[in-house]
Length: 213
Image (cartoon, rainbow, N blue to C red):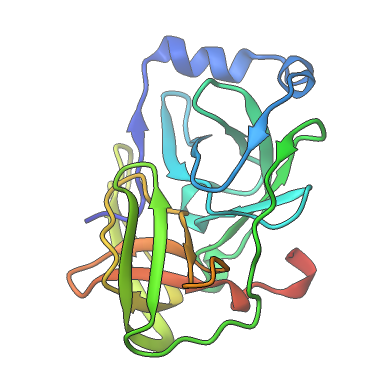
């Protein structure tokens, strides 16, 4: 299945999101938590629907890098602006993006294992906006460069990117991109990138530079 998910929106909805004054959105008290649905504008009439993977501090959260470019605003399901993508490592072969959260956001910070190591058969779980909660096992713990393919509703239509990742048996579908992957202790160890015929690809958070955490 594709790894870049673009949801065609009506022009009216898209315009409303773009036109909403940032000061109004920032004034609202918004709860930000891992597993929630997020929307990131891609073009005037399209938006990427993804999952917020981990809230790593009161100011930062993570999702998949292919979900949006640096500078793109990030919205919740109600259209409230919860932050902005301020770093994206997908061009550097790491499918992770950093979201700087709105100052007045009420956040639920996750526990993260920044030094996590993986082994074959290890139990992991995730909560995505499409397939919900699910458990799986690490099937290939090697952190190697893997190519993922996807689609879009705008040119070039077929997309692909490379990312250092591991393989798991987690079930995932369109929209689950960006979901946090946790170990048996409930610590976030990776970000869900895509699904392939071999399994679901997960990017280790340990590869994210310290300066972006």
